[in-house]
Length: 292
Image 1 (cartoon, rainbow, N blue to C red):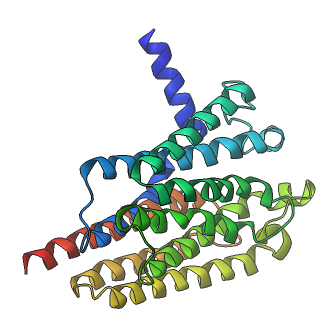
Image 2 (image 1 turned 120 degrees about the horizontal axis):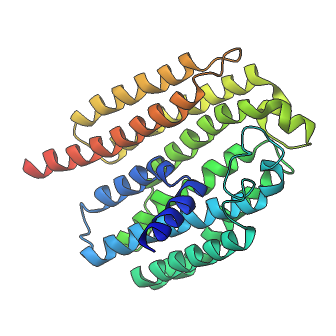
């Protein structure tokens, strides 16, 4: 019985790629740490914020798997995903999305009335991404926008309002996500063209798309530098930004238009390190500043 439950949980976790939560979660946690300067949330609020993040992302990824089930079954790269592979039914996925959405909305309500009200449009923005590839090559930018709501939402949850300064962290996440999603989409150029799907790589080609991705990641770095100054952060944080800059360059060095073999390394390993470095930098900066 316990073994069956464990296997079921692992299957759902694989469906939504729960391990990829590490991309956006550190940005949201960074917003919480920076908001802590003038506001000290209750431990219960922090727990609800984390549950809201998990619920929102799970709902979005689950909905994406439902929306793309027919396409995943035709694409050799995605044929092993849980729904086309028969490990989960679409009904299972629908129930999972409903449960995850309920968790997100309930957790937001437990944080405060404003968060509860905002949870509905945020959920819409997250779910709507799954249909954007049907009509616009800018779906990557939309994905970045949808996910970038995480640090803004975390900031509102802690402070009860939105600050101009945290918008630079939000913009950094938006361009960061959009940039590496463009790289990831280069794997499916032929498939997307064959099935009439929209993406920058399928419409503009790999070379132009990777150039746009590089520019977006340059903007990510610039937004993080601006955030450093608008928040008046300790100079120590610049060392972490330097490391992030090096990793962003490395990501674009190992993924080339004529060689996509290392895209998984760039997508998961390097991007995970970037997110973790950002949170580590924000946390260390806060500790150093607090010790002064």
